[in-house]
Image (cartoon, rainbow, N blue to C red; front, side, top):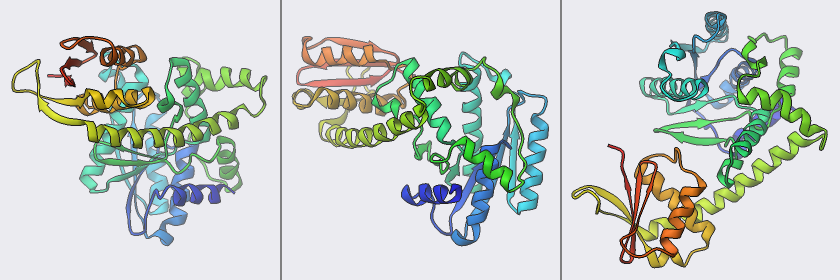
Length: 334
């Protein structure tokens, strides 16, 4: 059952192809150990070149032992092992510990991808991770995009991130590992409630089960449906963005470039599509949607529909100006 779900996710989303190189992100915990062993079972069939990448965050006294465990497991399985070690606490600069750890980890995987000339990396997020992420996004406030939670394929600075374990529950992973006598490491910080994800996992989901015993499956289904719906909206909005936009000399800073959107064309679109076109334009200009909130999008919508020519809206690291028959979107990042 577990192996068939794993293969179904791979084939259904075309995550890997034969004769391909693949970096596996392996922490030593049950999810990533399960993924490593499953890929090893497919190695011959797909003729895969597997490389295991382990990042030591130096956040626990057992972290060095985790690295040694993964290295020894790779030696037994005949998988190339690469690792890096950084004290995450020394890199905290405004972001949370979780965000800083994630950034350093992704930067390590990116450096592995470039040095090994392997563009694809597999990460072992599972079904429970999807459910927890949906709830975290809802608690923080999210749109349709955020309800997707964790997607099977994404791009990160030229690297392709694939997640083949999304249809597999944590319970099934642990049962499979026990049945096969496969050992793994346990991260005790996952039992602590100082992180939001752990609070959602240990407290909120338990409360929600009182209202719906199948709440985890319901939230997983919500994520999957939202993913399909958002994919359709995004593709449609991106086509509209391409037809309405062009790079134009910036008005706020002579000689700078900014995006220009046709105002009359924007006004003809459904508000949901307009909002998505704005998101796409801001991401194109700025490089991310970081710190962008609903109130910012609503202000741009008001600029488009109600405010006079010459009006300006300032968003985090973005300037949006209405001028004649156009909307200009300019990044303020130096």
